[in-house]
Amino acid sequence: MSSTTTDYKVSFDSFKNVINNELVTTANTRHSVNPSTEEALWEVPVSTQEDVDKAVSAAKAAFPAWSKLSQDERAEYLSKLADAIEAHKDEFAVLVGKETGKPPQTAGFEMFLVMGLARETLKLRLKEEKKIDDADRTAIVRYVPMGVGVGIVPWNFPLTLGVGKVFPALLAGNTFIWKPSPFSPYSALKLTELAIKILPPGVLQALSGTEDLGPLLTAHPDVAKISFTGSIATGKKVVAACAGTLKRVTLELGGNDAAVVCDDVDIDSVAARIAFLTFIHNGQICMAIKRIYVHESIYDKFLAAVVAVTKTFKFGDYTDAEAFAGPVQNRMQFDKLQKFYAQIGTEGWKTALGGEPGPKEGKGFFMPPTIIDNPPEASSIVQDEPFGPIVPLLKWSDEEDVIRRVNAAKVGLGASVWSKDVPRAQRIVEQLQAGSIWVNTHFELAPNVPFGGHKESGLGMEWGEVGLQGWCNPQAYWIKHSA
Ligand code: NAD
Image: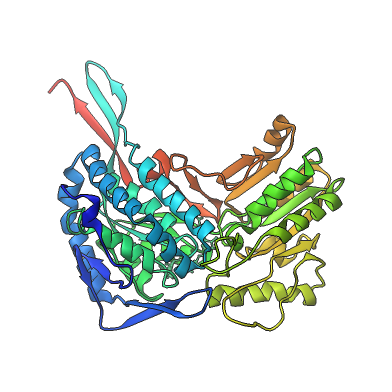
């Protein structure tokens, strides 16, 4: 633990697995592409069952010593890791830009979230609760680490969502294997490489691979817990795979967040904030606003204001310092979005901005920001999560009715209500079924506040004390004094 930030020098142009504090290549390699240019990025390992077995066995071997350290001792190690990330913050921002397509402003926002999570998580502690303490006996509820944890992460916020698992898992006393998305493996491998000089072998490892790698980890009998962030369809597969060994599972899945706008809002300022919270990172955020319900008495003015603000957003590539958002992250997502855009013609949706793009021209997975004007409630743009820059505005007039429409979704990640009359907004929002509810804001997060989804949006929560406890088994601890 005597390292200084000068020991943390790593090069940002080669990427390997990290197994037992060694950089490891594989017989086969692959690469992902820069979403702005479609150019190939660096080669990365394609991990096999053998690599998984090696990493799990190193993680298992490291667990007894790591879990015996105090929380303060583990926090001290992890604070060095946070220092090392901070020392390379600018290089990570460029790397995240290259692998996700985020322009510098959004990549900088990701690094802000990463550093917040790394630093603030280390201030949390698992606490014991004395439930009984009398002359006869003492009963304590405490939280003990599980063993080998695995984090499976998507491509939209590859570092934030990984760091939001790594730091609590390790602080709680588990060891950890990070499996990034094949679409964005680079920042995870590099961050884990930094840890080689800081953490004992086997404590933090990273494996990259194809879509076949996740199932090897969820099936492994020596993995105690899977923390998964990604789509609902894959989340269901993860639960099914974990059932065989009864692994603990946390799921952070997709959403279809609604914003309910009341008739008394300041139209220009609320429309600007809602436009921002809809199109930030091109709508490729689980908690971006995906349905905007506007009171019918202000609908036309509000729609015009959202359109006017959205027109001012600059879309550009990962080098464009002025750009607000970049391209869609990958070909798979780009193709999935085409199907939503195609329904503008086939379903006759009215567009207030954007529309069906013509044949793709030039490089990069760019899609036009598009606002659909009051489509039928049953249409797929209202019912499904596009995860891209296309959003519907809908009219409402009756409070009960809008609550019913928001809650009709099978998902429940986040929901917000916007009104100058805060008690009224609270009355509405408290009836919405979602893991996060907000008044006069949306996508508001903090490292010490848990987040997660209700209904099909997830299982359990991450971040904050609740998230830290999620990396532990609760344990009832009895002491009989008469002995
Ligand atoms: P995805 O489900 O396709 O992939 C997520 C991860 O799972 C990747 O690392 C992938 O390689 C891995 N994976 C794929 N098949 C697997 C399997 N059978 N077993 C184990 N792992 C497997 O999701 P995506 O397209 O990368 O991400 C987009 C989705 O993620 C959206 O629906 C979005 O809403 C959701 N998301 C949710 C949150 C949240 O916190 N709730 C955050 C970000 C994204």
